[in-house]
Amino acid sequence: MLSVRTLALATAALSTTALAVPAHADPVEIQWWHAMAGKNGELVNQFADEFNKSQPDYKVVPVFKGGYADALNAGIAAFRAGQAPAILQVFEVGTATMMAAKGAVKPVYQVMADAGEKFDPQSYLPAITGYYSTKDGKMLSFPFNSSTPVMYINKDAFKKAGLDPNAPPKTWPEFFDDAKKLKAGGSACGFTIGWMAWTQLEVFSAWHNKPIATDENGIGGTDTKLEINGPLQVKHLQDLVNAAKDKSFDYAGRTTEPEAKFVSGECAMIQTSSGGYGVFKANAKFDFGVAPLPYYPDVAGAPQNTIIGGASLWVMGGKKPAEYKGVAKFLSFLSQTPIQVRWHEQTGYLPITKAAFEETGKEGFYDKTPGFDVAIKELTNKAPTENSKGLRLGNLPQIRDIVAEEVEAALNGTKTPKEALDSAVSRGDVLLRQFQKTAS
Image (cartoon, rainbow, N blue to C red):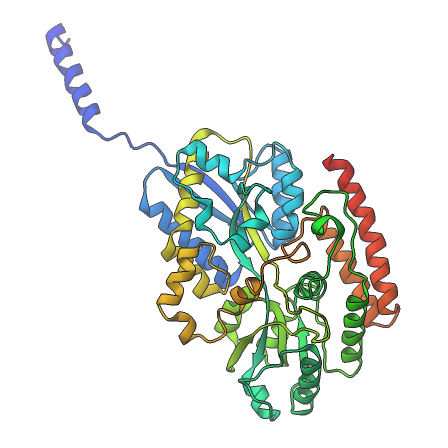
């Protein structure tokens, strides 16, 4: 039997030993659900891994949840089940939905303030953060992969068709004319288009300073109505229908599906997200260039400026303080200039901070990669107007599906362009009224 003195000494020794061992608690896990696949997804995983190795307290776990719509639906379902991730990537069309989801999200400006994390909204590019902020400039979600449509051209196909690869078409008439020449010169199709509803109606309207919807494109309130059936939009859809008939335009799908036709060399031009650059760079077997979107020269003031697409990171509600602190640390990590420069240069998505944009220029990257700054030049071409500062429409994912259906009806000849766009407006307005009721 141990004596009382021996037991006391043993207890003291154990206590001393226990105090000498560092208390390594398990890091707080932060689930990050995203929709980044391929090369972009690899970079997402690298960022999480680097953040985790940079400190011992938090562990970010990125989880790919499918496409944008899949990720949003998964996040909503998880929130209802009480199992939402701490961070959810939501495409820009889901912004109004997230803003209206009171209690489901915690605004980024509040997350950063509560955590005592250094955060200066003025250090971010206003053309990007304005989309995800309140009218008085409070950032609601964290812009992550912001993009805007640009035009990519196959320079080899241009040479083969006798066109100057360093002089891509500037106007829509030039664009349609070059498309015919490219097809005659050996390309299977002159052009294709990614994200049809976004690039050819939403951004197209802003680029020509035409409204997409009333009430400042929905930013002014939920009592908004679509206005995408004006004379210019109808004329443009008729021009696309004509190009489809003469086979210089190949419609290949509603989102990223057409990008495969450009990568393969089948279509010589494509208008799609600037975020497609990484995919094209990794897979195209030809020399390609980036150019601004074309415009109709008879529209006064065109070109105006483009609006952003892509996605932002929303911080979900109902989490513990330690999780929010970790989220704040991670958002600060993502805002670092070297991180933003890598993301911009490797993916084609826009840098979200002024410092990252300036650093990319100082490095000479834009000089070495002509055309890479086209997206930023388009966004900042002119001071935004009420028609071009963005849009915020409820049920926009469903509205885009309706617009795509109606555009497809025009392309296959079952409706005239005017009938198709009138129908898109009337059907879309029904969804806007439904959203207005739920948001009020």
